[in-house]
Structure formats: C-alpha cells, structure tokens
Image (cartoon, rainbow, N blue to C red):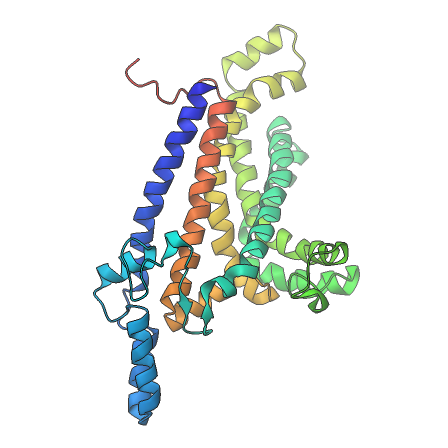
Length: 343
C-alpha cells in the first residue's frame, strides 16, 4: 500500500509538470497563425475608418497584455508573472476574457464543462459495458456465429461516420421511440437549478449522444480485447489449468482475462480525449451544449484565451485518465512493480 501511495504521489507530480509543458505548447500553437482577435478587429476597423472602435480595441490589447512579447503573455496567462492588474492567471483561477463572446471565459465554459464531462462519462461507461462482454464472448466462442457477429458489429462501428450515425438516430429515434431532438436538456430547464425533472430530461437527451460517441470506441476496444484474450487462451498455462479440472468459465476468468485486461485498462488514458475530440462534429450536428462547438468557434475567430483554456482542459483530462489507468494497472497486475529499478 505504501508503494502504491508513493507511486500515486509521483504520478501526480509528473502530471503537474507535464501539464505545465502542455500549457506552453498550447499557447504556442494557438499563436502560430499571424495576428489575434483584436489585431484582426483593429485592421478591419481601420479599413472602415471607425477610430473610436480602434481606440477601444487597442485599449483591450493593453488591458490583456496582448501588446507584449509572447513569452510575457504566456507567463501572465498562466499567472507566473504580473500583468496590468497584478498576478491574475490560470493558477489564480482567472481563465481570461473571451473577445468573441465578450464575457469571462469562466461564464462561457461554466455550464458546458460539466455537461461535457457528463456526456463523455456516459460514453465511457457505454464503451466498457459493450466492449467487455462482446470481447469476452467473441474470444471464448472463437470461429462461431457469436464471434462472427461481434466482429461484424465491430467493423460496422468503425466504418460508420459518427455524424452520419447521429443523423440516422436523430431521425429514427424521434420517430419511433419519441426520443428528444437536439440539446442535452429541454429548453424549459436551461438555466434552472437541478431537479428530478431536469435530471430525467438530461438522461433522455443523453441516449443518442452516448450511443453515437461511444460506438467507435466500443468497437475498437472490443476487437483489442478479443485479440489479446485469444493470444492468452493459446498459452500453455491455460491447458494446465484445464488439465487440473478447472471449468472453462473459471479458467477464462481467473487467468487469461486478467492478463488480457491490461491493455483494456491502459486505454482509459487515450479514451477520454479521443471521445471529446471525436464528439466535436457530433455536438454540432446534435446541437449539444458541450465545449466542442465553443472550441470550434474560438479557433475560427482566434479567441486565444477561450481556445487555450479548452485545449488545456482536454489535456488535463488526458493526463488524469492516464494516471488513473496507470494506478489501476498497479492494482490489477502483481507483475507490475513500479519503483523497483535496480533491484
């Protein structure tokens, strides 16, 4: 237990350092295109002779330190250096100002962040609920109709574009199952405090997005689990366990599945960011109030504080998922011994 706690503390420290490096990369990438939102606005206003608007935009550039070198802008944005109003950056809880929406970033992403987490958490649960039984059944009943059916479902999930599946379920789900269309809740509950009726509305609206976003992930994970489990089932220790009188089900669950489960758990780190990035187009098609459409708008308009925070949030989810998967691997597989170098 002490070793695990030490490893968790070590991974948490490395996660913070990695997040710091990622923040620098994110800031550099979003500043690669020439200019920024206010510079483009100033050029447009100057071309039309609106001097009052030019003066306001230049004042905003000074207020948010956009007239300083990039390295200073980064330190001010993260909160490691004082800006025009002192230390006020990410580590102080100030996420910046959105020039596109003319609001603090906190107000824009406040509602969308928890909805994004909810949608993708539901998609993760769907992925594991589908991939785990199908992968085990496909491997245990190899070269039977069960295996062929599961494989066909996997290929179908990979081949079908998410946005096309969203449109199909959009139409038939509403027509035959009376599922709600678009959004993550009824318009009557937007801006209202949480209640049982609002929660029920959210759960109904989650059905189609969860299925659409999680289908490709479930298909890929099912195929990887099947391949890993088939490889384990061909090893000599399985024959030894069968010769000792263990039932096929007990043999499968006690030894091969545990060994094949490692890549399954390790996929947690890659699954969260893949679902979020893959759900951007789906969110636009289904009208979901997640950070996907907001990120798309921010990147198009070069709204750097808003885009930078969202990209950093996705990176944070990636690092958290990777840390969780690493800790679970330590707990699940006794063969893994972190911190045992040189022994």
